[in-house]
Image 1 (cartoon, helix red, strand yellow):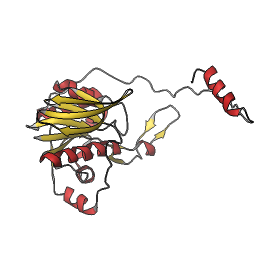
Image 2 (cartoon, helix red, strand yellow; image 1 turned 90 degrees about the vertical axis):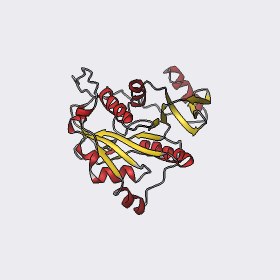
Image 3 (cartoon, one colour; image 1 turned 60 degrees about the horizontal axis):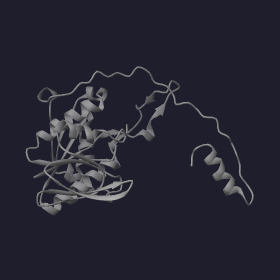
Length: 253
């Protein structure tokens, strides 16, 4: 059996610049696999090592996703091999299209039974791709997952919720999105990076896949409205009570 991890090689938003029209300029931002995806890979590796499974990475992106730097960056984190779609046109695809491609890549891993994604992507952070992948595959989806273990007929999943942690036993294949702190991530060593260069990364052409293309287009970019600050200062013995009362009056508490 194989565990599939969907990862994204994307530009770091900390390096992006917003222009006067509210548009984001990514030209100087450096690409990498985010820590969210690193958590997913580490969790997959932990599960796989306990049950002698293979961990296969899948990704969709521009031509650079199949490059040497992206390959070493991703596979040094614990993947055994990877399947990627490296198409510069993918930069303009919606999350729905990307998820449909990821689902197609999952189907190419013949014995896949579990797909793990990070909490969100490094750049967009929409937190919807795991659900879309599950929808295209017809598999159940669980988000906010903090732990997952192999069972006799499937997996036992621990999921964080507003009421606490619930434990679910799932039979059959499934998709999960991990929390950002599900496992501690180890920084790849030089040995890991060199070994990653020798691992297998296959590219898949879009002609071999069934893509969903919803009719979406961006029609406007605007900056969020700037709210005037009240600039209230609370001092003295009753500062805390006055601060709390002010928050309540504004509907914050």
